[in-house]
Length: 229
Ligand code: JEE
Image (cartoon, rainbow, N blue to C red; front, side, top):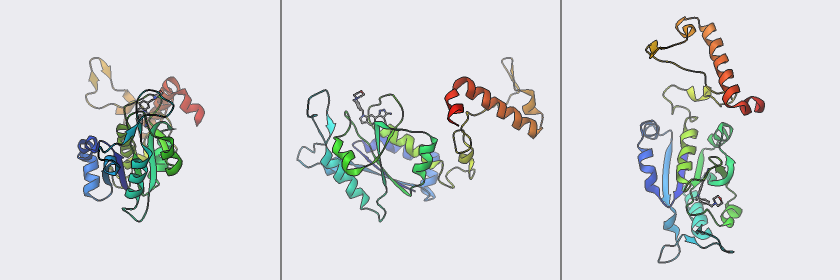
């Protein structure tokens, strides 16, 4: 799967790209990630990519020209243009269903904004899939793009060492409950014991306990997940 990231700050991605799981996937050619600086498509000698909003108001907007031309040029680097994803606070909130949809594309272009967002004509012309991380404001699309990449690559076959553990994730298709409580050694820590059933070796009982743990947690913390199912 190929990702192209369009951003004014490609450096933000370098530490993430050299992270072990992703690096291994890139080395094994399962995933490729290409960053592009939108400023390379600026029109004037000042390399402007932002301008004041018509109608007034605080802050600046990403200009339509450099952004649209950057996306169109990057699409032409490959035979398949790819699906354009724009990170924006107005987008569809990211959840595992959307992650699964995005993972169904062989190529994604992630358009990252800064300032107070984009001139509306970027949306009107590119018709991107608009994606949001949720109802809070962050300073730009880059961190959101990394979140999208990080969630999507878990679903690329072979990226997780253990072939398909991503398919059993909490929130994946057919499992939209919260994860059950988990424990590792030692059996007792500061007076807190590991539940006896997990030490029993009885796999049927363990499965039942985990199912129960998932339901209890979900009912208590995220009842919305039970009604959506
Ligand atoms: C992309 C710029 C910052 C946008 C103005 C704020 C006025 C700052 N879940 C998510 N939250 N935020 C983003 C996101 C933020 C971005 C960009 C994504 C590009 N910014 C920014 C707008 C404003 N508005 C709300 O009140 C009205 C200020 C995001 C995602 N994905």
